[in-house]
Amino acid sequence: MPERSLKNWFKLAFHLFVSDQWEKVEEIVQDNDSTYRWLKEQILREVCKIEENSFRSFLGSAALNIRDRLITIKHVNPGEEIFSKVKFWLNQQTGKFVLEDSNNATEDRVIGCKIALLEASFIYLDESEMVANFFRHLLNKLRGIAGVNSAIEEKNNPTILAQVKVIDDAAKEYVRSIGQELGDWPVFDISAEALPSEKPDYEPPAIWCFGDYGMADGQMCYPEKVAIDKEGQFLVLEEHTIGMGGVVTIQRIQLFSAKGKFLKCLLKRGEGKVNGMTDFCLTKDGNILVADEDENGHGRIQIFDYEGNRLVQIIPEVHDPEVYPHFASVAIDSNGNIIAGDSSSYRIYILSATEGKTLCKFGKFGREEGEFQAINHVSCDDSGKIYVSDSALHRIQVFSGAGDYLSLFGPKGTHLRFLLFDAARGEVYGSDYRNHKVKVFSMAGEPQREHGKYGTALHECWFPLGLALMPDGRIAIAERENHRITVLKI
Image (cartoon, rainbow, N blue to C red; front, side, top):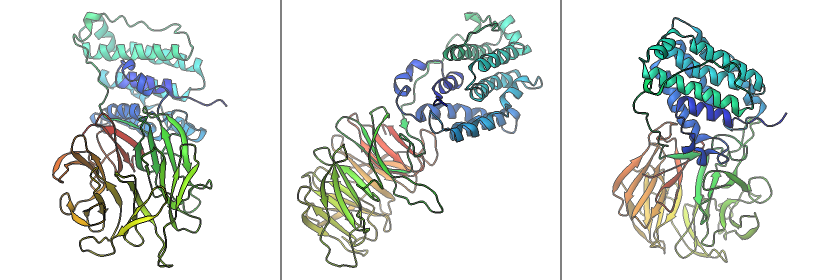
């Protein structure tokens, strides 16, 4: 069976529930992010409003069904299992039931028609002629609603008429897009003067995102780190998890275009080049520096080009045969040296990127200045200072480039896991993993602004981790539990 595409189906949903101004999103959506996540979040927002406004009613149940199916669909080309599952639930045709029940209010029946169109177009996705026939049937039902007929004849309900026109236009466009004729299509003679005097202008959300859960190309399984290269492309690292009980897991560094289109998989666990990757960053010359483990489970650092060729391998000297390094985080300082946080010995290594020689190391287990009980992330600012986040002690310590303790960064008791420095604007971004926020600080650590709260909507966050800075001042956030990369200006 040829690969199914839901591109037209998503476009229909956008037209019915969000806006008829497809041209404002087409460039971002079309042939880019294969999960359609940004578009889907906009549709979900409107469907959730219907569900909330019609709680404990048949219309609310119909909206809930559509909402759950949208969440289930993780790719614009769904596999047979997902397609069959969604089709099974949409076959309940709760939207059609709302449309056809004359006991429902006219407003509810009109919205029911929108949902019924989405149901029918998915159920009969493989039968274009059936879709066209079903659409004609649904539009005839809509035309036969007394409240709709009265509004058309008397021109006395511009709100209803605007919705009816949206439905008529969207349904016609969809039927034509699947290569079918309109045939005996019902006539909705809605004059311009009967419509609202001002049409709301759609503005795409300023917050953009791409990616959704899954193991296919372009999908993400718990993204932990994001980087942006000199061409504006995104590199995304997934969490290193090992499945139990036969559960299959995957870990990759994937490359995406500036518009979220999957380009290729750069590195993948288990293909002989990398094992469990704990972190990565880009070197000064644009190569990929990866912290992982060798075949014996010992920590190492490797550098690869974009073709997957290994350029450098660094295995630090081991002074205690019972304690091998395990690098939880890596960064590149202003001199091009590698800063690596070893969670086994609770030390920070400064390594030469060319020779792999240990230039300096500092730290030990403890609670005092310069000591750690966890090393979650290391980062560097343009002046050469090193910042180390410690989730056990809820603090970020600042060190000189030589490893001398300088100060603490940010408020006491912080839950920040990751720091990103914007030297041009004199600001620092921090991912507050526990509180589902990204916070902005001055270079001195004083709070300025913040973004997010727990949730899945575009303006919400769910366990934000890695951050990356874009040239225009926007930042990219790797949201672990939302399985997406979110881009915004805070």
